Image (cartoon, rainbow, N blue to C red; front, side):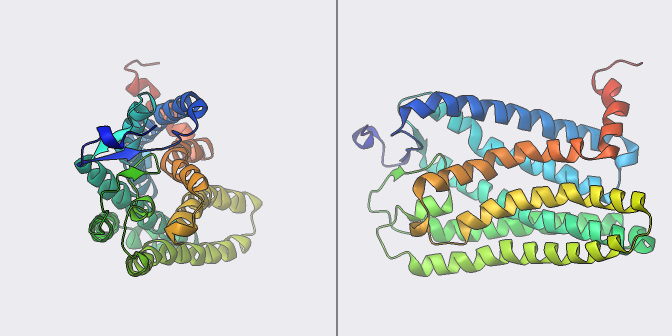
Length: 313
């Protein structure tokens, strides 16, 4: 369907899977269910971490930040995607596209850094337990969280500016569900290789350096855990770190696929599915992984449940 003649110059057409109308309803249902679980799951994690004094520790402070990120991350794109899937004319204003691009990129970069900070917290807890309270003090945790947020938004402003300044020559059809750097670069009628090289450099800083630090941290953690003589101690240490490693694998694996290769080399359909995975599925899985695999979280849920639903046992 051609909407170009009906579209304002200040709008973009988001094609999504418009060429496969039979996918629209299943996709709408999956997105709606995933978004509902994401909202409920992350709100529950935030409430439990705030209401239960036993979870007022650095680990759960960073987990609260991660839940806030995931809530904002999905809300930036999913509601508009649901509206577009349910209507024939799938458009977004230029201002809306810029807002999506900046916030989605900022929160994604912030999450990369925050996951690295969380791995450092686990490294100190396992490898330097006697110094944990001194190293992971209140002000240090606040500074690390603030650094992650400020760096993420600074990176986003820089990458978004480079992307949006590329000439489009009237091209308005974005072959995606939302506005993202790789797909917007494909609209350019100029040579994008210099910009791609600059964006690749910033993506390496935001993606590869944190994931390298995470792998180094978990290398030391594995060594320390293997030295623990108690089987129960080893099990508890692996349980504590296992949830974080699952989240890291899901998020970094898909983000690296999208941002560390030229847009032209990305299969358009596969790229859309990967974006949906780290933009919708991963934020939905994060609270489930942390709550279902974490004994402290499960016990905290039982303690604060009466307070959340306003009754006492």
